[in-house]
Amino acid sequence: MISDLPFQPELQISAIRLYQTEIPFQLSFNHATQQRAAVTGIVLQFTSACGRHGFGEVLPRAYVSGETDASVVAALRDEVLPALAGQCFASVGAILHYLDHFYQQHPALAPTASCVRTAVDLALLDLAGQCLQQPLMALLSGRLPEIGIAAIQKEALQYSGTYGLGDAALINRYQRAYQALDLQAFKLKVGIDLDAELALLYNLQQAHPQASWRVDANGAWSLTKARQAIPQFLALGVQCIEQPLAASDRAGYLALFADFGEAVPLMLDESFCRWSDLTYLLDAGFKPALNLRVSKCGGILSTLALATQARQHGLMYQLGAQVGESVILTRAGQLVATLLGDCRYHEGAFGDYLLCHDLQQPSLRFGAKGLLPTAELQTAPGLALQIDQALLNDCCRYCDSWYAGGRCG
Image 1 (cartoon, rainbow, N blue to C red):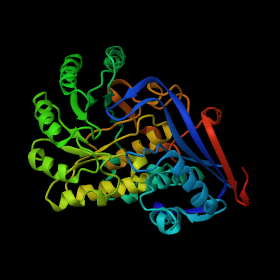
Image 2: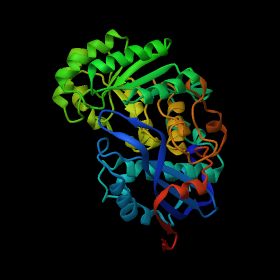
Image 3: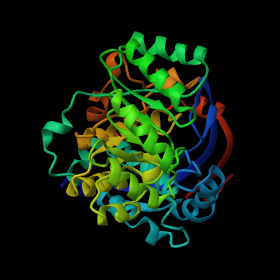
């Protein structure tokens, strides 16, 4: 199997750099619980003894996985990276084994530290592909043998636009940009003013008459408010309701699925980072839809594993994204969605439509009708990244370094 390919010579992690980054937005982006004019994140760079580089990225959000930038940096700095500096891997299979047993390898980490695992997963898999000069698409296709080659040969993914909350001028700017691209699917952030949001949705539907619509409350509704809002959004043709209640409101979700679970997909986002988050709904006979975001789900391998479990239970899922992802997480999400081949919706890939600058130029972003080709993922090594080191350095707020003989920064 291609996953057993040996490295010749062994892949040694000779240097590691840990960056804490900040990138301003072109436009502010707001939803019911957050307002953002910039994105802060963490980028991990592994360098092999043969001089190749692999990159990982995470955007920790306390209200999603419970992690923060500070907690992820501390866990990587104190627990994970010192042990990885200088470590050797004989084959791709050895890397997959390490990642599959990540928390056993680092027992001081809580198994809820999903962003910590994501950063390492992306950087190490990208480095493996770079050292072998093989696409990760080929190295990982054996993880999902039931897909078949037809899904992997998909030429492009079609991404959605997102409307955040804001004043009319901001919404109009988004509308003009989306109309120019002729996007076919949208998500509207809601959860503050129901009447105003219903009116906004109606007006946006006139501006995008051929598009499909879904809404995301980001956990802002109470059960009473959700029961009031959902029928009115369904009357306007909304196809999916995302995160209607707070993540902790399990009793509310049981009641809401009993009310609407047959009428419309109810999608979990902040409520779902690992499979154990779903068992109370599955045990009650309900089938939640799932928002698979690579950053919160533990990386590429964990996200593929969660999708496999979802398939076995007949659950719908989409490729989600954290607001402000750079090319690194965009490529990781694109890889996951292409391997799966059956995500209902695709989110992200905004690149420098949203970011003042991406970490590679030209930026990776969807084009007309939301389409983003997959060709580079199928031919270029690793995650098909061409990170601009100067851009990465420019957006860095903090950096730490290790090398094979110990810490150097």
